[in-house]
Image 1: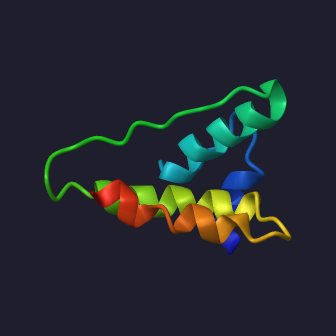
Image 2: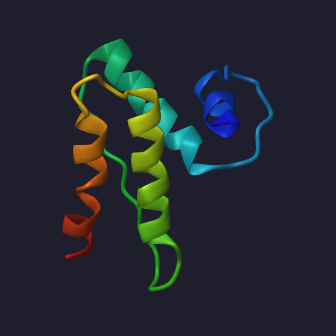
Image 3: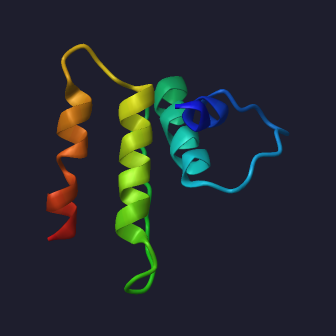
Length: 84
């Protein structure tokens, strides 16, 4: 996906439109660089797009951190749990 590549390869000073990929990419880089767990809090009113944003973030992580063991499918499968 071209958009994933744009945000994954971004560097400081790049002028890209705001997108959840920016936040999730920063968190993923922090995991890689510092080896520390990261959290992303997505909040808002009913109908604000929280579920969609979670799906976007999980999809991004699954694309950039995909593994031969298929862990990305397990990550994407957590969405029903998050809805509970």
